[in-house]
Picture: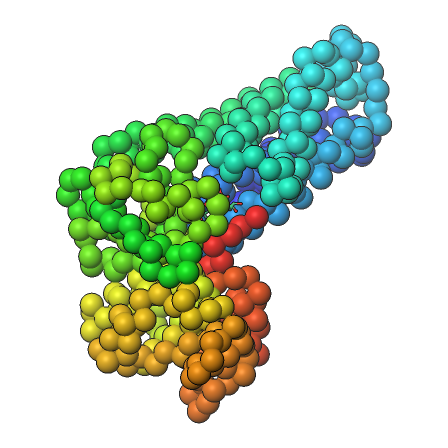
Length: 435
Ligand SMILES: Cc1cc2nc3c(=O)[nH]c(=O)nc-3n(C[C@H](O)[C@H](O)[C@H](O)COP(=O)(O)OP(=O)(O)OC[C@H]3O[C@@H](n4cnc5c(N)ncnc54)[C@H](O)[C@@H]3O)c2cc1C
């Protein structure tokens, strides 16, 4: 994927170089070259938006979103400096003797205006992503503005490239930019139109909602017809409850039920904001829609002598799905679950977890950072010393490690595992947050 991605970025520069046009000042060609690379990358950002399973189920949602964000920021810096690098100046009209545009830049109104609109829109788009949490307003409004802003950047950026670009006059590059623009816009059509359309034909309805812990709910939805979607334990969906699938009201939640339970999907949801705080008001029968499954925090195809699961708070949701599936399959491998919470009330499904220790070769250790009097489990956070106890005399490197919870917990466990010589590929994690 990395090779394909970077090949796409350098392709327009190679195509420009092969045209063998008369040389210009090096600053001008540098400016054109980096702008072409950056704009190809910006158009590729549309498919890195986390909504394409072919990408996010390979890379995982955390990596996909990190690449999306970091590349967007880096490419924007390049685009911002692009107009400042040019040293050649020229009249606002083409000079008849300068057919290869070696001596002048195109300063026609359309070339300048399209570039300016794309340049400003791109800067606004990236800044609004970086400072989203400080802006107030709903996530849905931000998402709508992000999609619209991205479409403006793609359209005006392509117009500018075709109008002002010296090398883009070549038919190959014209087709290249038009194809990239088409893919970018189709990505939006897919996300905002085709997927919702598909969802209207595969509706779900709320089956039950119940409080299962401190500010934590279990929500179960059932397909109106047929079976629930097929997924691997550990994956998540974008869930829309009580709104039209064409609205932007959807949130990512890990599926907590086992894939073998095909009559419903269940979720463990913590109250955080607008939607999650309104779960108690939901009534059975409320329409629901899902987009998924997404994510790669799954056991599928990974060999392991044993499986260590680390959950922080509501991070237990995908881990429950994994445990439930292992139990349904009668897996005999050794398993450990280190489950950290702040207070005892946050421990969900204590009886079911207890029953799992009898049906599976599973050892569960609970950690509470604010333990009540008489607490017999561990106190504090899941940390390196906890790992030392679990893996005393065992080869952690041959186990698979699945971590889901707050970022500091994930980082601490990952660092401790790497210190113990666990290969990177044996560690899977998801952090429920990608800002
Ligand atoms: C892959 C993944 C799996 C998750 N699984 C679970 C789970 O099993 N249980 C659970 O309780 N929480 C889970 N979350 C977190 C959950 O999505 C948010 O807590 C929830 O969306 C908050 O919505 P809200 O309307 O209540 O709050 P809001 O105030 O609207 O949002 C609070 C924050 O949640 C995030 N968020 C909201 N909507 C979206 C969206 N459409 N896309 C991405 N992020 C969004 C944003 O960071 C936002 O700032 C998961 C998140 C991710 C990324």
